[in-house]
Every structure is written in C-alpha cells, then in structure tokens.
Length: 356
Ligand code: SAH
Image (cartoon, rainbow, N blue to C red; front, top):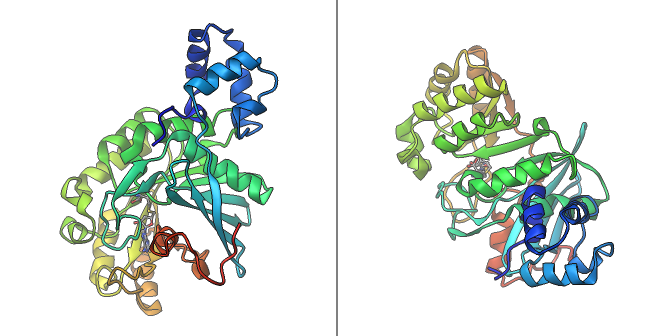
C-alpha cells in the first residue's frame, strides 16, 4: 500500500479540516472536491485554480489512488463490458459496465480479494489482499463513466470483496457518491450486497440509508448455509432476517435476497419449500442466480427445469422472484474469475482479448 493517504477518499468536511491545518483558507476544499469528484481530475497538478504552493502541500501529504485499465472484455451479445483495473500498488480488481433499458449500471469491487470464503466464489480463493479506499471505489465508477462516455445511473457494490468487511470505507463511498457536489446518485439507485454481517446491516438502518440491501442467502437453513458459506458459522439466518426487518422498518426499502442455485446442493423442491416458508409474508424480492461454475470449484449449474420449479414454488408462497438476467455470460463475469485468469497468466490475458 502507498505511504500517503488517498486524497480522493476525503469527504468535503475532512478536506476542509485538512486545508485549514495546512494554513490555507477552507474554501479551497470545495475547489479540490470539485476537481476530484465533478471534473474527475487524475492529478493534483491539474488543479490549476489552486496556488502552486497549495498543490505542493497537497502532494507532500496525499496521493491520488488512480486506477489504470489493463484489460477490457466486451460481451458482443449484450453490450456488457468487464474491466480489469490496476491499483497504484499493482493489485488488480474487476468492475463491470452494463446497459439496461433504464440506463447504465456499474458493478464495482470493494476489496482486493475477499476473506469470506464462500465455497462457490472465485474472489475468495486467494483470500483478502487489502481493502479498497473509498476513493478507489468511486474511481471505478468515474473510470467507467469516462471510458464509456456515458452517464452512470445505477451502482451496485457486488463485485469482489465483502463491503461490510470494509464498512467505514463503504460508508464514506456511499456518502460521496450521493453527494450533490459529486455524481449525486440517489441512494435508491445504489445496491449493496452482503453475506449478512448483522451489526453493519443494523448500522446502515440507523443511518437511514435509503439504498437497496441485497443479502446473499443461498440456503434456506443454517446447516446447509454453513456448508457453503463460512460466515454462516457466525451469523444465523434468524439474526440476519431480524436485522433485515429492522432495516426495512427504518428505511422502507424492500430487501433483495440472492440465491445462487447449485445443482444438487440447494436447488431441490425441498429447499424451495423451506425458503418459501422462511420468507413468506415478507415484503422482499428473491433473485435466483444460476451459479456461474468456477474452475477451481466443483459446482454445476442447475437444470433449467429445476430452476423453473424452484421459482414456481417460491411464487406459490406469494414471493416476488426473478432469475438474474445472465449479463456478461460470455466474458467470465462471475465474481473474481477474470482477476484470477489474469494472475494465473502472469498478467498476460492471452489471445482473443482486447488490450486497453
Ligand atoms: N460479498 C458480497 C458481495 C459480492 S458477491 C456478498 O456476499 O453478497 C455478489 C453475489 O454473487 C453474491 O450473492 C455472491 O454470493 C454471488 N456469487 C459469487 N460467486 C458466484 C458464482 N460463481 N455464481 C453465482 N453467484 C456467485
């Protein structure tokens, strides 16, 4: 990690304090914030309305944790782009740009790697390398907006990493992303996905963040959940659901439950019935995700008939269910798969992939 902190991670308030401590007038904080979050400057030297001496002071104490696009894959069928970005300390992270009817959406990573250990997920294979700063999370959004030359309307924090294992940075990312002095994206257009870290769900509720909370459930009972998600040893489904109820009561935002279907593991009619009774009567949404097989893991996709049966049983329980649209299926879009192929090939993506 770099020795100097990331300037892009400072809130306007923190910037003001810093600037005053540097012996400068606090209004410069607003200028710097605008350079970073509106004009999306890539260097302190670009901030030409600041005096040279202030720019030097900033450079002595801070750095910009910029990202460099090292690769991009495009799914020609659906226009999804998957980016591989390099951080200033030479780690690689994945981010995805998707186009829907209602606008453009990006999926970003919150950590380099992940330590949650979900058995079907590629992001966790090498463990967690480090947390991303809030500036690096923002920069993924800014970068894709610039590279695509399109305005991003929705942001989902569903890439590599567990956002609630990097909670303070996630909170400051959310605050800056929704800030009117930045991209000013509405909380309603932001989704965060967690494996279910209860105290953080409750903290989000206390903050009254009106975002969409997605819970990676993947099993209808703790016993099965523990087999596929180590975090289930610490957080029970009952505890997670009660934190979700609290979040719904405080924010009025309907929860999404994600359920990755794995053949013969969690896709039986029995599992569907159990999940149906567990969630029945809740104002929620269930998103079924046919598992994206990862070569290091032994899971297979459920058969279409089993997926359809699973959905039907949930619908009988009056639940709102969708099957995730398989965006980017031609380009290794499952969490962490692209990063792993990049690392295994020593940074060489091989033939057929477009270098950026
Ligand atoms: N750590 C967070 C967010 C990252 S993963 C979380 O656990 O929610 C985003 C979603 O993709 C999660 O629901 C995750 O369980 C799921 N996922 C990860 N790998 C997958 C795979 N190979 N196939 C299908 N879904 C997967």
